[in-house]
Length: 435
Ligand code: FAD
Image (cartoon, rainbow, N blue to C red; front, side, top):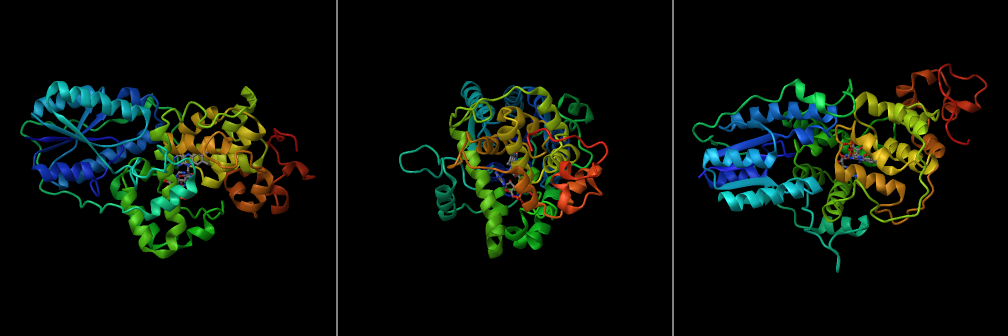
């Protein structure tokens, strides 16, 4: 009998264990994606745009393999049950995921399967090492990165699955139209003019270019804001257009790429934290006494990139323009909001989440809590001087000039603290904090 493969954020045909296992059972497979209005309503417009491109590309990949992508709209569980009934499927395959929403979906699906007579099987594929595969002595997840990183490197990674071929849709299965532009109306934030384009083919091209080029120099250059020398593969990983395992294996093959592989372990680390603590996006992982301030106007200035602190404004404007921000700028802008302005990490995290194309519950809120000192940092009170960071990671001020045109003529020695300059830049605000 046919197998339903429920795609969620694993929008690829290469190294897709749930799809490969379905193909191994027999030729008749229903690759299904359900556009769920409840999910769309809390997705960034940038992510919806990426998703639409990724679905179109996935349809192409599945057609080349002999099948198609069946697209439905509605509640994911109800639509999956409907598809299973109409195909006479006896199994539903999906990739295991970590958020509270994903756990609830898998639970409801299993309950429906028991009532309807189909089995539900979850497969790896969202991370390099599945959450729960590595456990510290006496704990249900790792709370500190360094021992996790050691265990992660020593773990026997599975072999990647080849893309399937010779698939067939069951007779009478109608593929249905891909989601149109109208579905982006529901999303949050605005569409960024320079966001990254989506889909497995584009992602694999970016991956190949990265492995052949920038990856070897990553250790040296990744913190240099103006050099922009990171992979920009985060959205591809977020939507599973790339297999994190395939990427990590290929990068590990190039010895010089170790610092990059370490970042992929950070991603896995936050995922295993989120699996164990699904409230990661709502409440303190490690509660801490902080007197947060409800300063709406300071928060609005931070969101708009008009705090008067150039390095913070550059990062926030990069986010608005590209739906992306350099990691070092994410650290600086988040530290400024939570440590200088004392605005709650949840507000900052929600703003990022409303705009980032790579916005992901585990990575976004795990990192926000890390910066705010309520997360997995072993030194939650570490000092973080925004202006020192600005001089160190953007010494010539080129990153600032790229995103804050009001300061384009400011010399390098003044650009980090323009309020000290005898000649003020027109239209640029005074700094929001005590200088
Ligand atoms: P590279 O430097 O090339 O790294 C390669 C990959 O490793 C990334 O694509 C990402 O998947 C992973 N990675 C790198 N750094 C981290 C990290 N610190 N934590 C987890 N994974 C990491 N990343 C997201 O994917 N989604 C988010 O929503 C997100 N929110 C963040 C919020 C804050 C406050 C901070 C400080 C970091 C956040 N990150 C998030 C992590 C990191 O900033 C981005 O993954 C990175 O900037 C993406 O650019 P890149 O693909 O060029 O990364």
